[in-house]
Length: 124
Image (cartoon, helix red, strand yellow):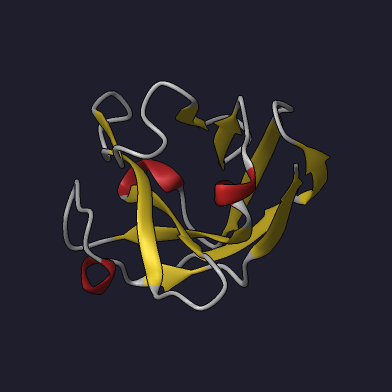
């Protein structure tokens, strides 16, 4: 069983960048597909990005494609979400999640473990 803790959120201006971290303990992230999701105020949680268990294949939501990058540092047992060219529509609580049963998934119900979330606020 893996425990996940996000960090790196904050208040930034439109056009700025942030890097979110998802530190894992209890197991190695190489055993999991890793996803990032976000919950925008008044909306359901939505998929943002996924990194396959093999550490190579990635997939992004259309809204973040070309601006966000998901990655993993095996030595630090930490996953990251680099977010560039942020805009106010990116404001929300960002969650990392680990999927043990599948290598690669965009659906929430495929993920077994979740962090507590970190707030990202982008001002215009």
